[in-house]
Length: 132
Ligand code: HEC
Image (cartoon, rainbow, N blue to C red; front, top):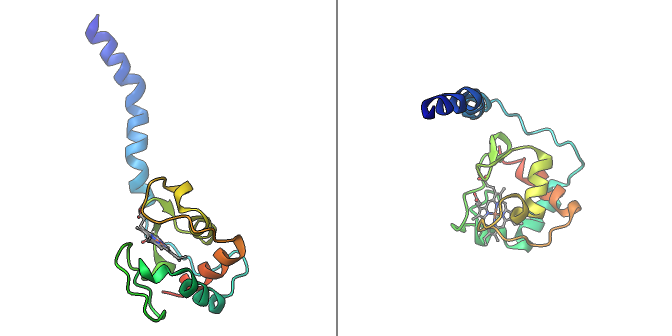
C-alpha cells in the first residue's frame, strides 16, 4: 500500500519535475541580442545620471570616471548578457524595472532601491546597453 502511494506520487509529479529541470537548459541559448531598445533612451544623459546616482561606488562601469566599486558585479558587456542579477531575462524593459526597484525583483539583494524614475531608468538602460 505504501509503495503504491509512492509510485502514484512519482507518476504524477515526475513529468512536472522533469519539465522544471529542463527549463533552465532550454533557456541557456546565449543568443540574446539586447542592443535594440524598445523605448526611447538617451545614453549620454544616462551616463551623467550614473555618476549622479553613485552607481560607481558599488560597480565597476566602463566609460564612467571613478566608477570602480566592487560591491556588485562589474557592469561589463551588458548588451549581450543573458540574465540580470542571474535571475531575470536581460531585456531593456527588465533592465529598466530592475533599476527602478531591484528589491521588488529580488528581495533582500544588496542593490538598494534608489527612487529612480521611469525616464531616468530608460536613459541609464540606454547607456548600459551601449556597453557591448
Ligand atoms: C550599494 C551598492 C549598489 C549600488 C549603489 C548600485 N548597485 Fe547595482 N548591484 C549591486 C549588487 C550587490 C548587485 C548584484 C545583485 C544580485 O546579483 O543579487 C547589483 C546588480 C546590478 C545589475 C545587474 C548586474 C548583473 O551582472 O546582472 C545592474 C545592471 C546594476 N546593478 C546597475 C546599477 C546601476 C545603474 C546603479 C545606479 C543607478 C546601481 N546598480 C547602484 C549593488 C549596487
